[in-house]
Image 1 (cartoon, one colour):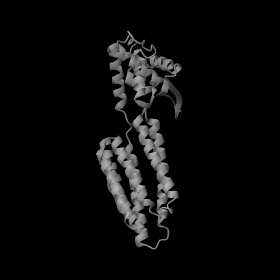
Image 2 (cartoon, chains in turn brown, blue; image 1 turned 90 degrees about the horizontal axis):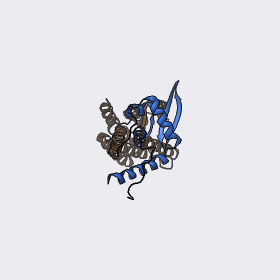
Image 3 (cartoon, chains in turn green, cyan; image 1 turned 180 degrees about the vertical axis):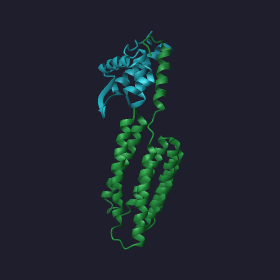
Image 4 (tube, chains in turn purple, red; image 1 turned 90 degrees about the vertical axis):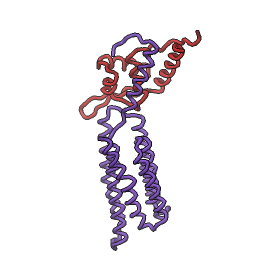
Length: 190
Length: 95
């Protein structure tokens, strides 16, 4: 690009071409989080359900410790992706902030799960529903939006079943509303 | 002739206008990204980024990614306002 005098029309053409250059860039790799958290949360839900419903094991909730290494792994991956990215779009930032705020809400809910009468799973699935639906809207990817609706439906079911059964519903809900759209997103990223 | 406001000389330059328009659409961008999208030479781009940064239109952050130095640019509020004023002035010329 050389320096020369711009006419008004050239100025406008340049502005619009640069803006459209910026528009088509958003980070890929969103499916990684869906697959990682989808598997971790689904397996933890189903294991918790199995231990609670079919065994005498007194501490079925220990299985949720698996989210700690997953969280660390997720953070490392996020930092690496950020380092690799040459550009951060407004959408990338918004995407990150949506899930970050959901993460904070999740911690608050876990802190006060006794006050929720241990119906926290239903609320957590509702949070995942919001995040998944909004992600689908931001990425213009309908399977995620449908996934978000399925998660919201799972939450409604959860509120109407026993706490033990909530883990089974949660596991199935995460599979259908989070993991499957995650794999579809992965397919699209290629 | 009230519609003819002077065009901001800092923005009325091909490369600087390209940089500001590009940064307007993103949260932040690295030097190499801007270089690729504008097709500018590294030397020229460096000079123009310095000019924009001196006018506080953009923020330039130099950091290290591992051992590699990287320059990240971001548009500032002043930059957005200047861009808006530039576009409005431009409208006066076209209408």
